Image (cartoon, rainbow, N blue to C red; front, side):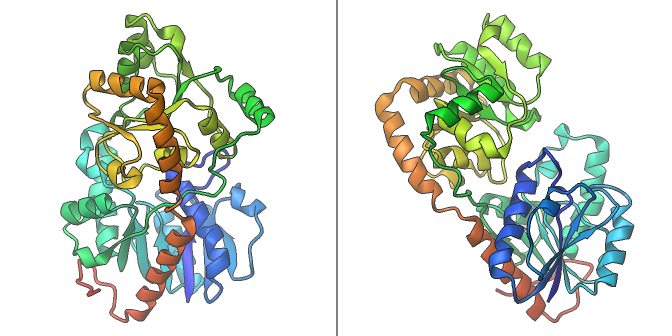
Length: 378
């Protein structure tokens, strides 16, 4: 089978959740996908060009950038020229027409369930283009049972069309004890001796303002480090509590250094109110770091019973959880051990195997792609 995978979201210095998902999928297909030919769509400066690829995986450079008008014309033309049997759109970005079967990965549907956080243009794009592409796909992949339920309920799809392929944790995410290397990473990001850590962006559903409010309300005396852009509203909250000097904003942290940062962290906090999966808390668990997460969306499904859960809308409850995570030694020891064991159950190779099975299942389905929803028996 000739399979095309869109990897244009992998850019220099940017390995957000979707990019990491695609990166690990491609590198595991090197191990298991030799029965097929893969064409990987990249842009000019793609970091993937620096990696070694077997003959059955071919990088194909195109001019249209990820999320653009031009992609709706160029990608169908490329698929036709390459005589592809299947196109995998590993995010909500896909052309309105493809000359072959298509599989999409939808990580979450927050554009639909949280429309107030997105511009009218985003809402129109998702409502009319993305929804159409999802319904036109042969199958839909997603990253949690929570997201599957959200997709089925909000897009009116049959459950048998949607498959869960959990994200994985790279083996490099483990407790680091090399003191010289840890100090080297600490110096790079100017991290304090002890700190609470949150890795996120500033989107409203990430709930960072509530976290800062909770931290400032708490009796914790070690700093809070935020790996997100500087936000004036966050600074104002900390000023109101007289704790501006305890809030640190750090520059973008390379994935290469994340295991060390997690290992240096006293407590990792992830207060998001909506996540399709939530990879950072699982990676922190894998490094033996105690974690506080919101009891919301997919997070209980992903971390199991191996974290401190909080109501993300109650900053006083979050403050109590932070204090427990920092000062309850017995709880910390238990979470450090059980969390690392739990994280080992999530494998990028397992995700890639399941994805490859869906590719091959699509090949066996000889029915033509319908413009509307179709029922596929499992």
